[in-house]
Image: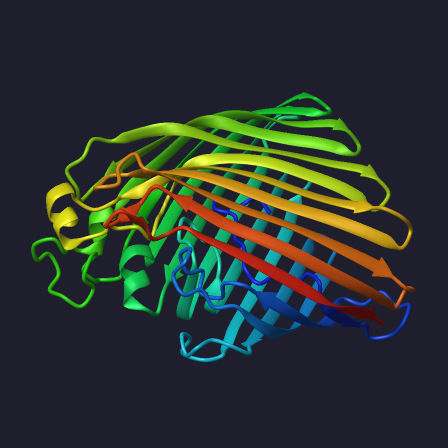
Length: 424
């Protein structure tokens, strides 16, 4: 996964998956699957260290359906999934012992002619009591929360060597609980244009730019959502609104049929339109490398650096009055994903993410926060229809943000998944 910030939730690894085809041996446009798994979560609320952490066993069930239709010049891909986690022990800290999520994805590609193509995609997510790191927010988020990521990109070949990609992206986040809505509800809009040059058949150089706005649109007071907006120490959440610009150059390289990489590097400039603060310029980096080094084995590595939203506002009413709110954070994320065929029947995978963030503005300006997530999965295929899986994940957050001399954001979390995969 190549997102900043890396999303880590209840993963459908180590479970039982049943794929149902329309007819055995036929190539059909649709696939229906069902995933079931048992798990243990040592810190279901991602509580700070030593602060009443609750561990629980649970069951996870997730049906999904995928559909692909190909025409002469077009391809349509649709996907939908639903996930339900049941926790045996919550100590009434959840609104419900169930945690539910849903996702809907659509992607449409069309070639108008050999030189012009269009790609439209959208990804919608509904998550409830989901534990994740999402654009700087850490820990469990209660409520029926939604996010949406829509993209339109048109590619045009101008000459045999020059081409351009023009795109638009819309991001939308809405949280049910006011405490998260005030700091994270927002609409982001970006326009992008890249100019590409074919240096040689395996190398493409590019320069580009991206610009847009981030609008915090909850209509709530940032520090005390229920209090009058713009009262002392309780500015409107829109005080964080920014105009954001990226300028970069890069390269797309095919080193071999099995090894490819891409790089974009440049600068990001942010202009806070509702707050008296100087514009902030920071580095921008997006690097990825993919290597299919053997049959059934693949490795991916990436680094992303950019500014992003945060749930942190300030730790007290007085701090917001005196220092202003925390505006966002600047983050560097590293990710590694390796899947290795140990034998014909045994496959292992390792997933690791590290994110280092520095807060911008407010009392915690310049303070840092580090988040790690490391996981491993083993899958053994008894035959073509049946296999067993087991997974383990460890997450930890190390923050300099303190309250009354005590770290209140730090946490550790262990998760174990196990089950059977059946395929038909």
